[in-house]
Amino acid sequence: MTFAQITAAKVVSGSARGRRIGTPTINIDPAQAPKELRHGIYACRISIAGKRYMGAMHYGLRPVFKDTETLEVHVLDATIERAPETVNIEIVGKIRNVKDFPGPEQLKEAIGQDIEAVRAMLRSHEEISPKHHP
Image 1 (cartoon, rainbow, N blue to C red):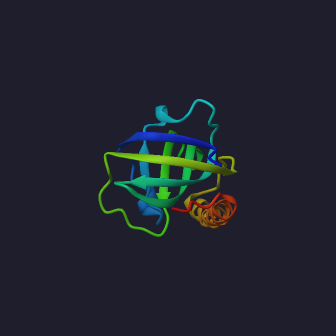
Image 2: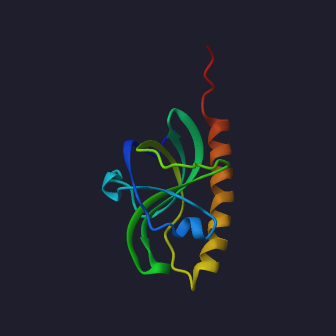
């Protein structure tokens, strides 16, 4: 079951903070978020040029950096050398609400925990999803 979808999402440039703390992201215009989507950290699948990847998505404010709302996906187990023009995002479920942390190091630690929670949720989702047979 899919929580929400964002189709043909336009990729925008970001601040490169994710890259600096070891979790680069693909940034999407937050205006493209589904109206029912609330700020938080989500497990998702992201399609880039026809290939599907697991992703950890952040939607909301960035309190550690006192910055504005963002919608960004960290692609798991892949290095995306060049940002695509558009992506498709299938949001599977919410991991947690957006939180403030004392600084970037604590945020980095929380992101590591979020990624493990994303992996577990996506594995679980695969196990309960109907299998497609040709």
